[in-house]
Length: 116
Image (tube, rainbow, N blue to C red; front, side, top):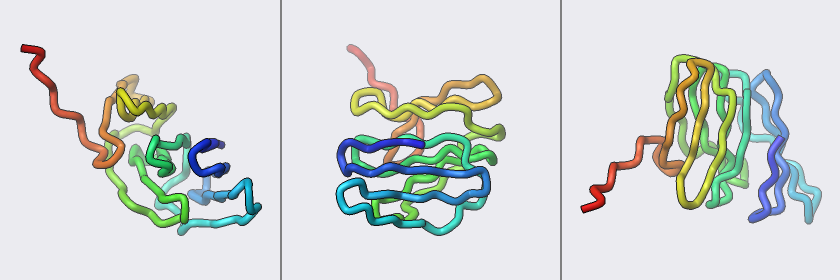
């Protein structure tokens, strides 16, 4: 389960790849297309998009209208945690005990910045 203060949306997911998005102001429910793998973790990005870490090691981005925007195979192991920050981007942890820092818009590793 994840909550987005930006869109007043509650997301609830199950291991079967299904997500339910509930607009808390309107109490309108949206059920996006079923995902290709079981959902392990959810979090909202600063943009308001929902990010789902899957059993397959993929991360999927879903709009608050329920449209799948992006899917990227990031790990060979299931995800155990996702955290999103406007400053640091997406931090993803998986069962291979790796922490990954990703750009939530592209699911790629951010470019390193030379401090000099």
